[in-house]
Image 1 (cartoon, rainbow, N blue to C red):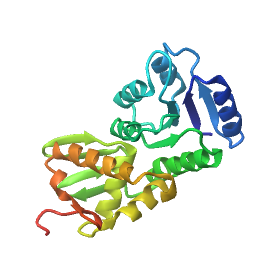
Image 2: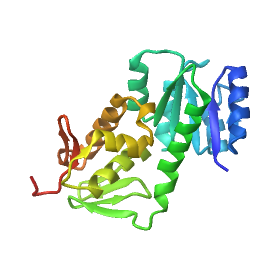
Image 3: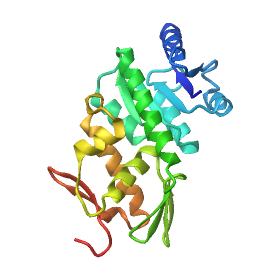
Length: 229
């Protein structure tokens, strides 16, 4: 049974979500003390975290930043605010998805299921090591390493890199990446993919690999091999 941690201070909404999610066979936890969020996170060890932005003490961005400093667990943001900057900020901090309140419960379930398929299913593949531009890509550990060092990617970043290097030297359309990553492109902002690609490329720059992820304007993205055009 997957464990969900809901960092939500609206008790009525929390109870409603807990009841509905429990009905889908998820093990649901809430925060008892908003002064002890990280301690409770460490004790629960959730498989996915759902965070509201507006919270007592500190906002959801603060907790996302702290969680990301310790874990690559999938993070889904909830927000009653409709400013696009909130979605951009959540993606830059390493969140996996974003839902605007009020939301239809079927959308929440679809997003959670998509996250679990993406994050936990593909790690069972026997071929977990891939070679690209002289680097070793460890899909299971979310690590990319070469003679310049090693970097750790989030689940989303690794999934995107995996999709691109499996079709290296070919252009992968934005639509194909969105469908593969989120399963249903109706539920995701096009800007979310851009943020993830930019974050991935910036991390790869530390290994002198960022230049090999190319943007093809109006077409998509390509993972190029060294020496190829």
